Image 1 (tube, rainbow, N blue to C red):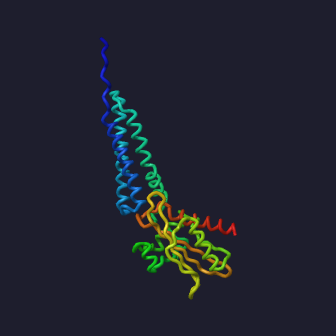
Image 2: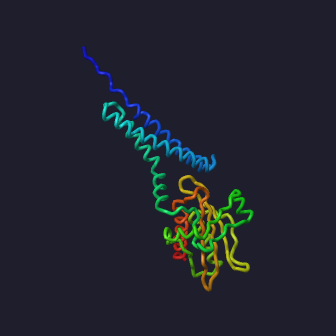
Length: 258
């Protein structure tokens, strides 16, 4: 009579690593999805995403334990542990990138092309309602100095156009990069300056970010200054500087096409 050997038992750590990794990925995806659909508050979405990161790290810990157990006892669960590791690492990929940027870049969430006199955000009723009562806060000039070595390309833009033409070009450029117009004031008045405020969204979670543009007429030219500010957290991970440089590049493209 043929005897069949009982199958090797499973590693409990491997099974738990897969369960926790899948749960972490699910929490992360739901956090992003619900935030983009505006079904939960941004603070809650960020807290949930932080919890997902913690769970992914726990899953990797279980993977480590499972690897030791499987190596020593020959228990089943290699596939579960490998799958869990892949899911956890994918969940941690973008947060890991942000962590790298946080170490590399200064702790700033408000970037301007004019450090000494940044453009102000509109206080009009239209802007206030579009921002749902939020008004970006300013930074001390000393704090802004940190952006100079980190973002040397964030500089004022000077175009060989009069203020009205430059204003129309700025609005066209903002639309091209996907910004939503909140408020505008064409050049004129005592100073001759023009202003426009916009909203943009973060890439992953779709959180609102605020941008303002100031146009100052010069002799035969117009100076354009921008300011981009994040609403959540003390660190923007370089997003505001990238937003400003993307605008400058698109504006140059628009000028070249004229």
